[in-house]
Image (cartoon, rainbow over all chains, first blue to last red):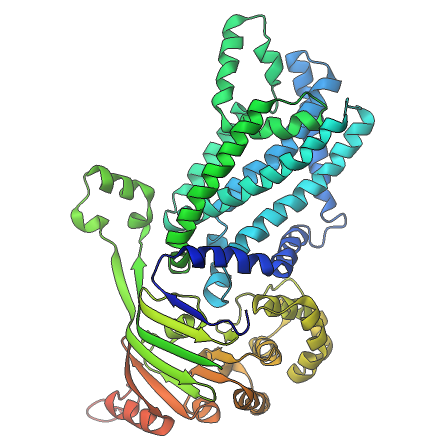
Length: 280
Length: 260
């Protein structure tokens, strides 16, 4: 930051777009601190603090696991881990979108009063989601003890899968963040879409059970879920976490979405980065 | 070398009311829906127009002008928060702005934590800020108060904190908005010493204020902004005199017939 002359003008430049991402990355002490602060803030003055994230996830997953195991007539040791991992992953995906919508709007004060690259706020958001994810992993760890899963070496695929989730969370938050700042209708729209997608994505219902359903209409309809991009994000990480086999097609879809999404987002960043402080 | 070079820069704000900001209107506009042509046109406010400015190391510039003349916008342009919609602004040197004092401060966390976060925002590292906390505590005279949550602070105490941070991090370009008027005279004298030191060492100061007294304390030249344009730029006293003559404030022009 110090000593580097910066000439700013109205031009839409690739250089300034990448410079924003790069300078924000170098301020990781800042967003690292703010991300933690966000979490501590939420549970300030509570005794258990951020552990509440873990507890509420555990309660929801257990309650719904028991409920849906009963409703669908599934075995609990199958249904509960499925729902739990689904919830943990969905918490990350869903809030990357809904929080992403307000990533700049809710930081209006900071953006207008302290000069910083705008993507600082996106790094902070993604980092916060990662911290939430880490808290929820505790529930997963306990679950592994109660309901052991057939984990193998290939379960390590969950690590690059999570990296892909993070990479996509970043572009999604940045993209919807910029668009929402300009068009304030997007946040409520996104909220509804995320809610709807929660039901359309196999989280409480078990995808493979429906695919192999004896009822052919149900099986055919379940095929439609392949068109849901969230299904593929869910599968690349849930399958290894539950010790299921590797399915190439989910990875291919996710990789294509990652590339296309980033390309689109970089164009938006190049064209509208400088406008964000005018729009908020 | 610290410098600010602004060439023919303008800052135009699009004003989106609830209508034009909505996606629906934009969509309908594209499809040629039933909205009047005026409704889809965004109103633009020219906050700054054709600003050309060269400031070098050692400059201590006051910004004067009416409310809404563009003083704060110019400060934000110089700090890089707004990039000019036309023209260019080139700023060389580490910038530290003190604008609205409530912003970027979290009322729930301690003064100490706020010092660190503010420093991080201005490009410092945690360690660098930890090293400076003692110094800031001493300068601000806040002492043990730094352990208390910020919501317990008075406005003046917040100003002290913000000034303490920006002056401790050795900025090369210091941009102050009027808010710092909230501190008491004693502290201001102390701050003045520190600010002039800063400017002498390597810096440049731009200070927007309505207070002649404060301006005389901190600045030697001044820029008079009028409706987004530079009306005059010169020695502080000359600009102040001219400003007063040309734009008599309501207080200075007694109503005809004298006081009732």
